[in-house]
Amino acid sequence: MTEETARIEVCAPERDGPTLSWPGKRLCARVDVPSLHTVESFGATNDAPNLLLHGDNLCSLAWLLANGYRGQIRLIYIDPPFDSDGDYTSANRLRGQRGEVFGSRVQYRDRRQDGDYLQFMAERLLLLKELLHPDGTLWLHCDHRASTRLQLLLEEIFGAECYLNTIAWRSQVARGAKVHARFFPRSTHSIHIFAATAQAEPTWHPPRREIEMTRAEAAAQFMEDERGFFRTSHPGSYRFETLVQLHAQGRIYAPHGGDVVIDEANRRVYASNGGNIGVKYYVEQRGRDRFIVTRAVDNLWDDIPGLGTIPSEDVNYPTQKTEGLLQRILGTASEPGDWVLDAFAGSGTSVAVANKLARRWIGCDDNWGSIRTTAGRIYRANSVVPFEIRRQDGHPAPPNSITASVHTHHADGILHISVDDVRSAAVLLHLSTPLVDWRTGVQSIAVDPAYDGVVFRPQVVDAPAGRKTLVTGEYSLPMTQNGVVAVQIVDVMGNEVVLVE
Ligand SMILES: C[S@@+](CC[C@H](N)C(=O)[O-])C[C@H]1O[C@@H](n2cnc3c(N)ncnc32)[C@H](O)[C@@H]1O
Image (tube, rainbow, N blue to C red; front, side, top):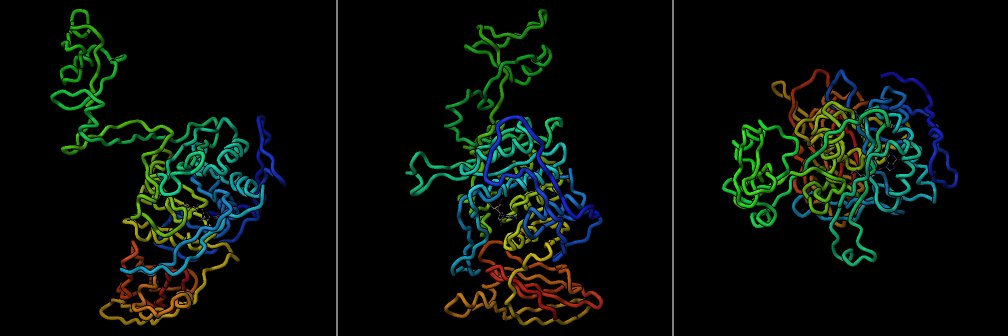
């Protein structure tokens, strides 16, 4: 894709209806398109690669607009800072069985002056709208603090006629002191959904949800016959032939203990003891005491747990959302092969889910901890697709005060790499005693056997999942000719270095 312009300018059209005002309001974004350089590249592809863009997303979005992505994105999910006036931290934690915590590091800050938050969001939403495919939708995740203002802002930018719905997601169950919160505990987040245009029919696959119940619960809600629990529904406009067929399958119900009567002459199906016949819908049984009912999903999502109850998904990034939530969003409003964009990627939940669901993806974040965490999730995925990490020129790289001993040797066409004695100055500074095993201070190790000195192209990535597993430090891969071997080491505080052997 080629660069079209050095500056992107987008302004919202004048609209009727209520508007917000704030100091210095400008419903225009004018952004110089930055230069991006690739810092890491995995796998080769002839298509546009999946992307992780490191730097302020305003510039990243301008770069996407200038480089062929205008109108290409089927689904945009954003979970921006919530205007909370707080800092968001991750624990510094050694890996391994004991997993000691030694302080914390700030991943991102959410502090702005009055009005600045709306200007910040307005400029990004203006660019995001330009990136949306005409059949696309934008999903904006927020909480009580900015929900109302953001919905109005979206209406100003997209037009009120593009508003589709607001999801109330139960992100947590009130616990501890929250149970006694004044004016009720706040347990939900809002997700506003807007269509790109009012004219096009958005891509939409209505999801269904499974509700699980015990035999006693099913018995309290349903009728039962020899085949199991069932509910009935009025036959509505079913034709006579269909009703006869359903009756042959035992799926017509007659009330008041009556029988089902098939009256061929008058092409009628009725109940012998009066009342209306019904069509039976059986409850699925998946175990001795496990019954499943499938229902349409409405805009109250209380069936997808937040991270508090799924510790196995936790990647130690603040405000991480759960894969179940993103699976429902992506499954509803995108299809395999579609571009999905998250401009506030954080731990990369949307990117990880897009990857699992075979969507093409772009994640942006200005925090390197986010980009590295997201890349780690992709490297650990069952199917790793080609992707590139690109950084805006001038945006700072992570600190790199790490040393290690790296040895390589070749035998029978195989390159063996041995990494030992990794020392991170930042980690050691925080600990009162030296590490017993250097591996506990390392998040991941990757190897590029043919490093060109510019772009790191890993052939091996050792980024263990969970907290307890350690990197091995021993790697073998087929030899490449004239290869300069480079080893990338990331410590548990997010510092990283590329050492060349
Ligand atoms: C609420 S978190 C996103 C969490 C994410 N949905 C997840 O599941 O992990 C918001 C993210 O936005 C990023 N962010 C804030 N301002 C940004 C900006 N101007 N450009 C790029 N990223 C930004 C922060 O670094 C943070 O990672």
